Every structure is written in C-alpha cells, then in structure tokens.
Image: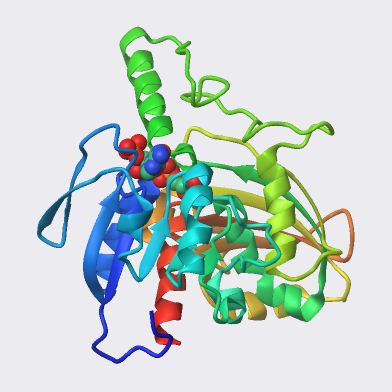
Length: 340
Ligand SMILES: NC(=O)c1ccc[n+]([C@@H]2O[C@H](COP(=O)([O-])OP(=O)(O)OC[C@H]3O[C@@H](n4cnc5c(N)ncnc54)[C@H](OP(=O)(O)O)[C@@H]3O)[C@@H](O)[C@H]2O)c1
C-alpha cells in the first residue's frame, strides 16, 4: 500500500473476527464514517457459516488463510491473540498494514500502541499497529492533557467493566442468567466457561488470571499499557478491575496524584480542551454506561479534590468498550494511516 494515497484511492480490507462484538462494530463504523473501501473480506473461526450483510452485500465468513489475507491493503485483527500471532507479523513484513486489537503485540517495544488523540505520530511508517485494552482507554484519553501539564505520578483506579468486554459468549451467558432469574426468581447458578462466577445480579473482582502477587492480568494491562502510551515508565498505577452486570460501557473511579500543583479550575480547563473527551462540569450530569454507546467520545465528571492528599484529585470516567475501547480506536488508526 502506498503511503501517499490519491484522493480517490480505495482500500481492500479484511476483518478477522468480523462475526464478533468488536468486528460487527468495526463494520458499522467503517460504513458510517465512509471509509474508502475497495474489496472487503470477512473472516471468522470457520466453525460456523456466519452470513453478514455489509453495504448491501451478503458475505459468508470463513477461516482466514495467509494467501487470502495477503490480497488486502489493511487487515483488522479483532479475534484472538493466537490468530494475530499466526498472521500479523508475516503480513506486515509483506507490506500489508495490520491493525491489531488483541493484546498480542501491545507491549512489544517495536510495535506502536496507539490511541490517535494521544500518540498518532508513533505510527510513523509502521505496518503493524496495536490498539490498547478497553478498560484503560477512558483514563488514557481523559487524563492525557492533565498529565502533560501537571505530570501525573500515581493513579489508583477501580473499574466497573461491562459484560460485552468479554465478547459475544459473555453476553449470551449474561442473558441466560437473567432469563433464568426472571423465570425462577432465584439468583442463577449456571456453570459457565466465560466467567468465574454468575454475572447477572452480581459482580466480581476477577478480570483475567491473577499473577503470583494477586494482581489480575487486566490490572497489569492497565498499568503497562498506560505507561507505554503516555511514555512514562515511572508512572505508578494500581487498580482493582471488577466485572459488573452492565451490557456495555466501562466506568472508572480514578484517584490522580500529580507532581505539580494544580487547581480544580485549571484541571477543568484542560479537561474541556482534551481531544476525544466530553467533560461534564455539573456533577449531577455524570455519565453512566447507558450513555456510553450514544457517545463516541470518552466522558468524565465528578472532578473533585481528594480528601487524602493536596496533590490528589478524583474523577469519574465512562467510555464505550466497543467503540472507543476497540472498534472506533481501530478505525481512527486506519483513518490516520490513509491520510498520512
Ligand atoms: N469486547 C471488547 O470490548 C473488546 C475491547 C478491546 C479489545 N477487545 C479484543 O478484541 C478481540 C475480539 O473481541 P470480541 O469481544 O469481539 O470477541 P468475540 O465477540 O468473542 O468475537 C471473536 C471473533 O473472533 C473470531 N474467531 C475466533 N477464533 C478465530 C480463528 N481461529 N480464526 C478467525 N477468527 C476467529 C470469532 O469467530 P466465530 O464467530 O466463528 O466464533 C469472532 O468473530 C479480542 O482479542 C478482545 O480481547 C475486545
């Protein structure tokens, strides 16, 4: 793919994981934002013949092969780490632009981890680009201007993460449990491979496996990916990630400690000019997960001084895990690449 496209240039694309939660939202956004599409190829695991209607055409998803993927200019990887591992480096070495929304390459120092509002420049001429985990995207976007101005030193985060963050099987599980409750009036006890506990009418502080120190893989991702995106290795981040019975939209309760002195007024001014963020000054206008899918932007409110330290403030952040947390960020990366 040439790095200097003509205005009329169209791009052949492949979506690996098109039948999934992120894949379906990715297709919706490509259409809605009028991405200049040439030939489209849609892939799934190949276990089922899934039909997808896209731009008035019916596609039957099949399992991807290197030969098929090589026919594209841009390949979107929105399936599993294993699938990305199998194809993405080979394709990018062959000059095909790969945008990977799995966690496979996020911490690889040779592969940029991109939130376009923050670090689009890091894409450069790279052909393999990663998008970050959906639970940290809200904090990364909302706080990056504050970080630039006042140097954030510590973040303490509690997450309230939606079921759809774990994919379509998780939503099926949630719906099954809700139906069972409505039928029997009892808290369901359905054995699930998706979640460690019942999720309907429940919540649990386990998102991913625990390491030897007791931190979950999601908690480690928040720390390590944020440090990479903000290029701040000295940042201290500690979080508790919690899955909650919400369909979509991740919420974060965040304690932010800075190096430099600030005032609430100054922070507010920065939040109001932060790209990709809608800040609600009125604390009663706080966003909730139900607002998330209506909004492509990250939302924040309830900014206040912490009662613990003079250099610490608290803030409430909500973002849609399927849009800005995944599909939208991926499309924005692709848009940046074709505009370069
Ligand atoms: N959900 C989120 O909010 C979110 C946010 C950020 C990042 N992500 C990441 O995005 C990726 C997709 O997540 P998701 O929520 O969309 O998952 P999902 O709903 O479970 O969908 C997974 C997709 O991958 C396909 N797939 C599975 N095995 C495959 C294989 N061997 N070859 C090709 N395709 C295969 C599935 O096809 P079948 O239909 O045939 O099973 C399906 O299309 C994951 O890596 C996830 O960690 C998700």
